[in-house]
Length: 358
Image 1 (cartoon, helix red, strand yellow):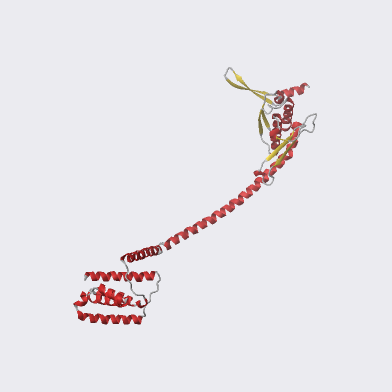
Image 2: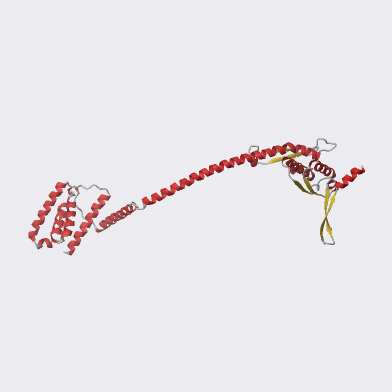
């Protein structure tokens, strides 16, 4: 009895697997109409009632024998007889109800359209079973992946709020960027205007200043000096080219001049910058080191005539330069105190004495 029950359960499981696989594979089964199914159920009930009179003969007939006989006569008749006998003899009321439902589902299938049954080997059956199980596992995995996430809605709301805050911050950053960009453009414009104003002022006096520093009795016009922007449209992206023409020579870059010529050109640029924005004082350290006596005298004369309103502190070792100063500050070594000492001489009183003597 237990073996027959196990066989029935196994067949029931296989049948459900076939139906489920057909449904998942979207295979259309030839189903009977509801009227034909009801008629089949009625015939099955009648057959079951007749079987009650046989008593133990039905009980002893194995369910597998019913299915074997059904295979030879048709799958539909075998399934009907097998389930009818199992219902009345071997199952409880609840099991009978479940099997009865399965039986009605099976009876809806019209097996007459199928070909003749053929025996299936254990190897072929196992291969097909593994194949179907693999498909079922794959489909079950896909279904699990497609299962709805209950927290998705809340996560979507949270992400939406974050995106809204990010967009708000982005708008503020864009506004701040535009404001800063406009301020930077205005700053660049003011910088360019200030630079061009200074450049034009310096460029207008550089040539005159250089002429005053290089003018001699023989060459009364002196030399020439020019400033030029390498990038007039965007001065800060380029530079300023400074070329001079010493007395009796061609135009050269300041890097191609001799030591004395570089000193004169540098002083001309310094005094031209001073003409644009005056400084309270100058400190010049040995500017006459590379100059001959004639150039030293011209530089001293220019400083004396044009720098009266500022204080010039010049460190020099040549008397042609410091004899034109208003005062001398000498630094010497004091042997008694073993340190340096300072000696100051006011030369203006000597000039007054010479004027009175004359």
